[in-house]
Image (cartoon, rainbow, N blue to C red; front, top):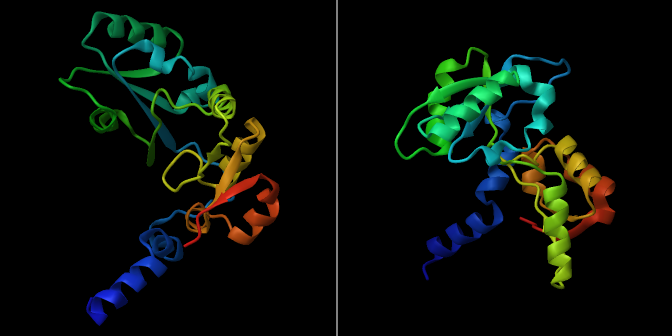
Length: 201
């Protein structure tokens, strides 16, 4: 191997992309002190109504939710009417081969707020996680949850919510914690007893 290739390899290992992002906060939004309702949660939904069975979990945000629903099948048209009767705002979309990204893009046409967030209809962290943890343990494995940048468990309050909802251990990953706005030293001090895996970069 050439010295240049060795040097580049060392730099890539020492400073992987996630850590570079955590140090460069240019694209991150700092948490504000004030609350705002200037956001829309877009929920892409297609295939079957059961994917939105856990909608009660986001009921407190109902006024900010837009369900981008692929309404070609008759059962989805009926479900759109049911959701509207429950007070949900629904954008009925007809498209061939729907997927969450395409539905999100179409749903954005109905968004009038400054910020839009995507929440997949089947996303839930509650008892589903407890069932997965129990299944792992029944098979002789100790599960670990990895709080990860760009997911629904990234910020400190999201990690706290996860830890309060079940007894799973977490992966301590300083790069992802920094991206989520968490000081790794404080995270280690606060959650040390729950950490059972490390990703050090």
